[in-house]
Image 1: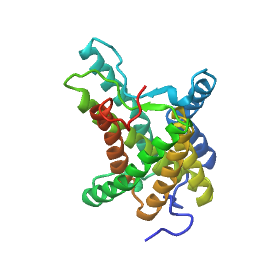
Image 2: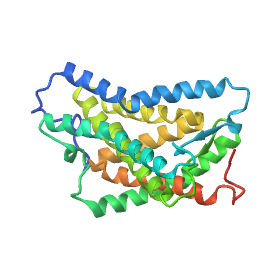
Image 3: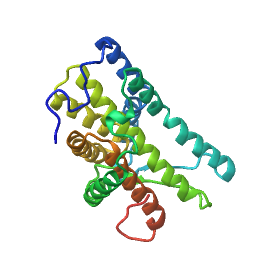
Image 4: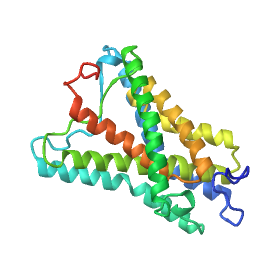
Length: 266
């Protein structure tokens, strides 16, 4: 059952932390994580627009080698990057615990593993096919860069690292952009619609390095995820769905790039 207005984002009247503190805290969390990524993506997109090549002839590369030709050092850097990227999630957990709640209050826990897994799988199946089709159309139309989800060397740790990277992206984004941000905006008095727009635009912003298609597609995904979070009160299914989507993109590209005609490469 959907929560009543004013409480669907996790607001509890017992909290006594001032709005000024909550506002400053939210800005700092975003500045240390996905807000900064949004600014970085905007700068990257401006750089792509001002290059002589068309967007479709440029590449947006993810999961690249950090130490080419040195696999053990490369692996160390990959794991270091994955772990440090999750520090903002630990900060959010600390801040929520400080106010007397925790990650459990946004549904990031192990209380309902099978419903979370089932719902997440269904979400991924629905969004995955539509998202891929949208990307191919936007890339062919010249509104998107060619996304190369991975370019790691063919070593034994390649696929485990890609899976860990997918999980890290998912936890970071869903905990902060959905569970935490919606909770804080609700506490700051934002309307449900304003909070939905803010969360969705933020999600689109840090994918802008991919082009207009990346921005629009992820913003639409953000709307869907916010609505589902408000219905279920849990980010668990969203983390599962996002992880499966990214595993499909990362591993699928590694297996198919250069072997099928319909998958763009640069």
